[in-house]
Length: 272
Ligand SMILES: [Zn+2]
Ligand SMILES: [Zn+2]
Image (cartoon, rainbow, N blue to C red; front, side, top):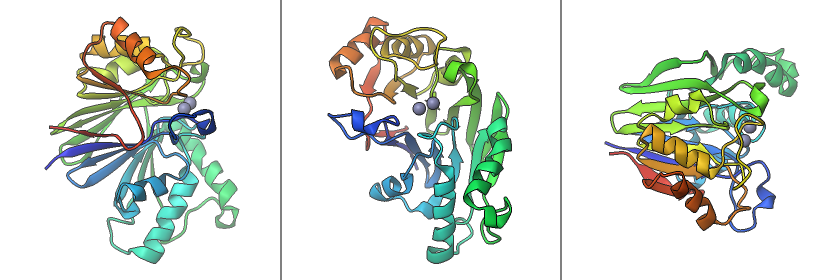
């Protein structure tokens, strides 16, 4: 009985800018006693799931922070799930897919789907249809017994893009994921006393700001982790343009001396 988080993608959209590590775009898989929730659904994530030994049929819950293309390759995921159910597995669990989106994105997603599948007049295949759950600020749902997903609005893309951060409360601890966000009340809410905070750290050292586009830098992540009483901090979603020791020094400069690391694809974290 346990919980594990696997980093499937710690990079950004511009993977090829990264020379040191090959980081894929965002994706974090949480396994709670064999039930899976995926945070962000970037391009080709099914291949990475396979690489870590997780069968696509087991992914029943997907929560997407926002619709930027590096976070939300949903049509591809839905299509591959459909193919999986059709050709590989007919069991009831494999055919379940609940997708959590900000309510505005949930409202508009059928247009995206229809662009890919006009032959279905905006509908899904009659053998497989995901449930799209539209979330308001402060949304909460018990997604598995004893496991609660909370979603809170965060600040991203000049505040014009509906973006959310997630907080997953489980019997084995609390995992928080900021998605893409600048410093805002939403990230403070989700990070409060988290056992693991997975934090956007796209802004470069020395270029941190409040407001603006809406990403955080390492000093802001350290400050957030310190004030929220976070136990472990994973920095993610960065370009590798600053040296790791410089980035971590910024976290320490902010006063956070807990466990902090620059997450790499394949990293794993275990809840108690
Ligand atoms: Zn974004
Ligand atoms: Zn992003």
